[in-house]
Length: 464
Image (cartoon, rainbow, N blue to C red; front, side):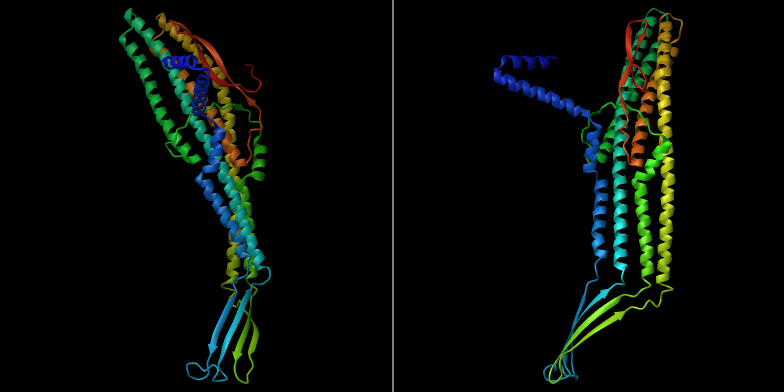
C-alpha cells in the first residue's frame, strides 16, 4: 500500500509530460507482470511444436527419407576403364611394335525394367510411413503438454483448497481454545485441531515440491531450460464431450497417424515382395571399348553386353522372396495389433471420461453440499458441547477430500480427452463450452458466519 501511494504521488506531482510517461510505464509494467503470471495452454502447445527436440528428430528422419527416393531411382554410376597392352617383354613398345596399343572403355549397368520404379516406390512408402509417425509424435507431444498443464493446475488448485480449509481449521482451533478456557473441553482437543492444521501445511509444502517437478517436465517438453519460470495455469473451461465411442473408433481408423503409418509400412513391404520377385530377372551391362593401334593396323572398337545369370536362385532370389513375404505378413499383423490397441485405448479413455463426469456430478450435487451441511451441524454441536472435536475434524477432512477428488476427476477427464485427441487425430474443441460456476453455501461456525465457495463446472442444462 505504501509503494502504491508513492507511485500515485509521483504521478500527480510531476509535470504533465513526465506524469504521462511515468504512468504509462507503470501501467505497462503492471500489465507485463500480470501477463507473465498467467500460463496459457495454447501458447505452450505452439511453443512445444516449435521447440520440442523429439519433433525435430522425427522431422529430420522424414527429410532424410525423402532424399533417398531420387537416389534409389537413379541408374548405377557408369564405369570408365583405360589401360595399355604391350607386345613382348619390353617395358614400352607403343610406336615401335604394331601389337602395342592403348585401350579405353566405358560401361553402364541397366537394371531389368521395373526394378528402379519399385525401388522408388519402396522408398516413397517408407517416407510416407515416417511422415505419419512424425504426425503421431506431434499429437502425442500436444497431449503430453496438456496432461502436464492439467497436473500443474491441479497442484495449484489443491494448494488453494488446503489454504481455504486451513482457515476453517483455525476456526475450529479458536472454538476449542474458547471451550478449553471455559473448562468445557480438555487441552487435547486444542492440540488435535492444531495438529490437523499443521498436517495441511505439510501437504501444501509437498504440493509445492510437486509443482517444481511438473514445471521441470513441462519445460523439457516445450523445449525450455528446466529452471525457466512458469506462471499459474489458467482455469480450464468445461467442454461437453458429445462423440460416442463408436464414432470415435470410426474416426480413429480413418485419421489416426499410427494406423496410417502401419498402412504405409504394408505398402512398402508389398513393394519389397515385388522387388524380390524381380530379382529373378537379369540385369544388363553395356560396354563400349576403343583400342588405339599403330602401323598398318587400324584402331579397333567394340560394343559388348554382359548379363548376370541368377543361377543360384534357390538359395538367393527365392529366399529373398520368402523373406519379403514374411516381412509383409509381419506388417499386416502389426496393423491389426495397432487397431486392437487403439480400440482398447479409446474404450479406456472414453470410459474414464464418462466415469469422471458421473463422479463430478456426484461430488458437485451430493457429497460436497451435504458434507458442508454436516460440517455446519457438527461445529454448531461442538460449540454447544453436544459433539466431540474429532467429529468436527473428521467432517472437515471429508470435505477437503471430496473437493480434492472432485478437481482430480475434472483433470482426469481433461487428460483423457487430450489422449483421445492424440489417438484419433481430431480435436474435440468443436463442442460447446460451458462456464465455471461457484456454489455458495453459508457455513455457521458458532463464532462467526462465513461464505464458502465451491468451484464446480456447469453441465449442459444446469442453471447458474
